[in-house]
Image (cartoon, rainbow, N blue to C red):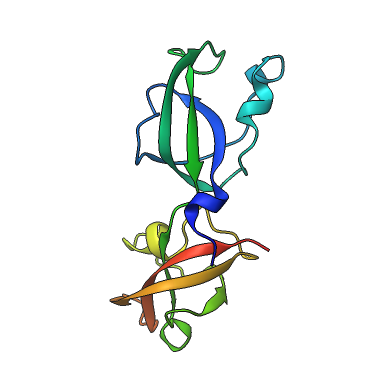
Length: 152
């Protein structure tokens, strides 16, 4: 299994967000990015994915989107917490992520663990730890797990 360091990417991030350990979902480019000379450095990330800042460099650049400018950062896709049916939530297993079809959208787990915005149906996740059983208000037999996205 590749470590985070093997999938590290260098990009630019707004100075107010650029803190080691900061997690963010990359939302893609805006109209203001079209004519920016640094555009290529910013567009190295995959839209809709969760990233974690590992290293922050000190050199600041002006940016049409970020009022206080941007700095160079090293980011990785971090280990995430999500849920799987208990029968397939096994440490060391690689499972395809499936969005949970649940109508209980006010559940605390709905967006955070069961249907995180940064996971897509085609994603394959390598389970690194089984955290435990989830108390599901609908009655699904789920476990929360820590996992990393397996790139093909």
